[in-house]
Structures are given as C-alpha cells and as structure tokens.
Image (tube, rainbow, N blue to C red; front, side, top):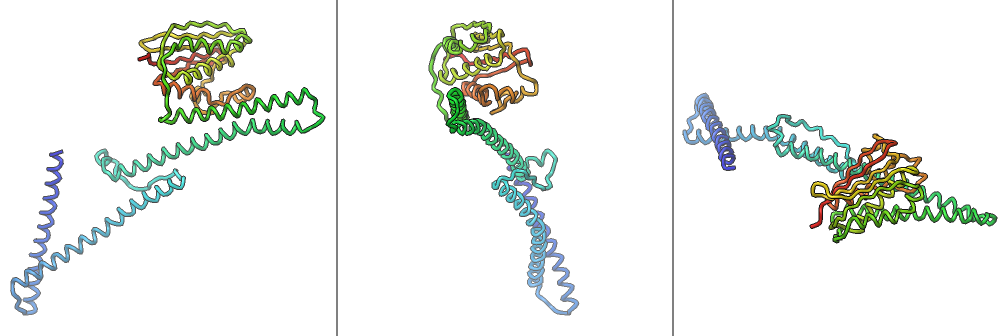
Length: 357
C-alpha cells in the first residue's frame, strides 16, 4: 500500500513538472514573438511588461488547449454514464434484456478499472434479475395451472348437483369428488406456505432431541394400509439413533419419501428402509423396485411443480411440491439428499444428516 501511494505521488509530481515546463516554454516563445512584434512596430516596451504579457498569453493558450481536451473527454464520460443510467431505468421497469454497447478494454490489467467493473456489475445484475423474473413468471403459471384444475372440477360437479333428478348414488359420487378436489386445493395452499416459510432464512427451526428410528417406524406404521394393500415386500433395518432436529419437519420428509415409494412401486414389489451411522453421519436409505425416473427428468427432480409423467400424475394425487419441500427441509438441517434411479428398475434415496450435539 505504501509503495502504491509513493508511485502515485511520483506520477503526480512528474505531471505537474511537465505542465510547468510547457507553461515556461510557451512564456519564452511568446516573449520572443512579442519582442519581434514590437520591434517590427518600432514601439519600445518595458521588459517586465513584455514578460507579463507573454505569460498571460501563454496561460490563455494553455487554458484554451485544456478546455478543448476537456470538451472532447467530458461528453464521452457523460455518454457512458447516461448509457448506464438508462439501462438501470429499463431494469426498474422490468426490462432485463439489456446490453451496454460501451467499448471497454479487454486486457487483464484494465479489468480492475472501476468503470469496467461497474459495467460488468450492471450486466451481471441484469442477467440475475432476468433469471429471477423468469422463475417468478413460471412459478405463477404453475400455481395458476394447479389451482385451475381442481376449481374446474368443483365448478363442473357443483353444476351437475343442481339437477333435481340426479340419482342419489351419483350425487354422493359427485360430492366425494368435490371434497377430494377441495382437499387438493387445501394441500396445495399448505405446501406453498411451507415452502415459502422454509425459504425464508428467518423461519425458526424448533430443534428437539428424539429417537429418529422410532419416528421413521411410526411413519411406516401410519402408511401400513397402503403397502399392505399392494402386498409389498418390506425390509426394515433401523439402528437406534438420536438426533437434534425439527420433529414435525423431519416427519414430513419420511412420510413424503415413503409414500412416494409405495405409490410408484407396483404390486408385490420391494421396499427397503435403512437407518445407520456412516462415517460419523446419520444415513437414511430408501430403496424400491418402482418405475424409476427417466434421465431427461432427473435434472428437474427437485423443481417446484415438476411432474415427470403428466398423464400419470393426473390420475394420482400430487402437485409437484413434495420433493422441493423435502430438499429444503434437509438443507435447513445442513444435510444432504442424493437420488439414484434407473427407469423401470427402481429408485434409491439417500439422506445424510449430522449427529446430535
């Protein structure tokens, strides 16, 4: 830092000496010119007045030259900043497709120039805001689609109930559909609220110390009617493990993952649930012989509202938020979730969590 200040001082000193040298040079030039001019006019003038007049003319010429240089440089700088200001105003109006057409140096040394960094920062900001806007619009579109579907069903079957001659069995069937669609809307709203709360960094995580193996076993018992109905072959190996975590949030993780495995595993398939300690961390593994996930769908696995098979998900409950919520819950607990899958062969989900204390 001291060396940098010293080098800057040297540069400034040399610049001042150069300017003084130019002024002195022009003073002598004008002194000679004025002396010749007055000799040509045959007018006698005092040497001091001659020096003063030549000095004033030299300074005037120097000021004129600097003014012309300033006129050339100033509009260029103003133009640059006006371009940046206009770009920022466009972003404020929601237009993020901007490109600052400003010629900038490309060498590595010039990239540290504050003006170059300013232009790069504006470009980066526009790109990031544009990405956020696209995510926001996609999110609104997905929410609208998910809400519209059950609302259409509710509206249609409610109109059908207006028919007084409708048989009682059909009336009850329509009422049952309306109730299911209303429950679907309620679940969608609840999941959206949970996801928003989890993404808020100020959302409180209520940690408690409890037996994780007992919690997972309770989830398996709660879902027993589903896997019994499909006659699934269940293998359960749960080591006694204690954890510090949010009990309610983690319960949602196990329920969601196990429910998905049961739902997408055909009859007489296999499910394996394991809980153990691996390399000083808690490891939960859930394997099934279900339909698996296609390679093209894998990259979208944890995206909101993403459904790998739209035709299939219309026949079964779900709004594409479950895995997004699971991933967020694991992240707020500083854990990891990994998925391995082969289409038509099965899926394996692995969750790694930190030990208690």
